Length: 542
Image 1 (tube, one colour):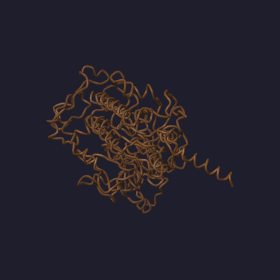
Image 2 (cartoon, helix red, strand yellow; image 1 turned 90 degrees about the vertical axis):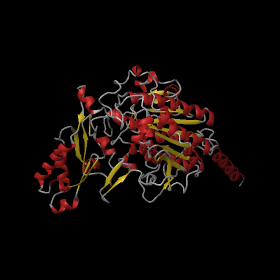
Image 3 (cartoon, helix red, strand yellow; image 1 turned 45 degrees about the horizontal axis):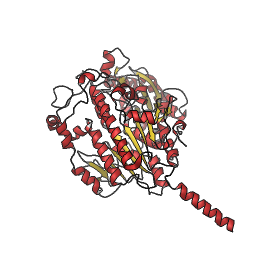
Image 4 (cartoon, helix red, strand yellow; image 1 turned 180 degrees about the vertical axis):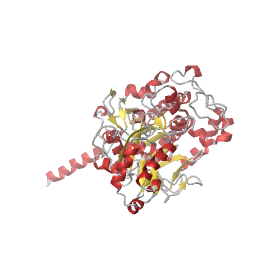
């Protein structure tokens, strides 16, 4: 009996010791940069200060060969994959927008019409994580601590806040017009500190300041000339150059554009993140908390100007300053050595199509009108219904109308095979596959089969899927986009810094799905439920 009681005492003491942050961070801060190629760390390195990106690389861990192992490489799937430790075929966020062949409806990744907007009189808050089909690292942290830990997500984009924060978050906040809002999924009214933050109306200060370059324009050696032909202009702007007089431009473009299409939006998110740490008391006790921060402005800026613009270079110089300021703030508020930070991206970006053409690089534009005409001619040869056999085309998925196939006495498998073969003969198509065949193969095979497979969810996949050639985009004549399986879209940075993180660099290939299980080890919590990644052993200081 004495032995039994002693054993219980020892067990209880061990359990209580485990339920502390003595060997765990008091706070984890996840930073996702929306649209950041890994190369930006090096291309702009000589313009960075010593206490932002460089500090994380010098004193922390750098994954130099870090990739997405699936397509499509877009914002919703990217954030979901980072925090679930798996890929779209498992977590269900298969795109920003997708078509559901079962309900015959289109869905937005964070959409939830069962909830209400909190903080504004519009529908921008009708969002939740309910479309995410597995748990996140943030969920597992909440469960481990019996919901005593706090989890907060913040971003200009709703999907950049909602998906990382997970199902059990204490709050997720994103931009309406010039104020942060949320959803009734989390609470019935905004916390008072969020109301107070919105009342500061920081956008007025940003408008007054304008977008001023950090350096003389002649010093932006890593970029093309300012006012290159590959950039989009704002309404009312004579040419796409810096500086920008936002007091003039805001009249035709609106204040939300000032916050999303300039580096001021990054500053706005950082200010809110700091307010969240202070007002939610994040990192103050012996229970690990989590702050998920997503910087959306690099994506808006990159789409508008392309990856070789002065505006993009200036944005990253300024973002480096934001990272430095955030690390200094965490040292002061949480304590140096008490927190862990990781930084990665949700996708990269392609070259501007016209830039590739002008510089004799592989690439250019996909003519969707011509492609659809070709597809119609192929289908019409098979059956007079032609394109009426197609129920929907969404992203790189084609869905057939199964009822019409039955009426026309057409076999789905045969038609999918024939159409995939035809699509392979289209201009600028690298490969096309019957999705079912690819899915049942388990993704066995090399590029691009393995990447396309991991993006296929059993209940949401189309009947035919494809990948366009490297360098080709379906986009306008200026700016650029992303979403492919090519390295410019998949190769993104990974920086980890702080408690339980070794310093160093690895050049072996690591994957976006490896971040969550690595954090699970650092925090001593279970892996997310659908996790298919592996902890990055070189990171762990255990």
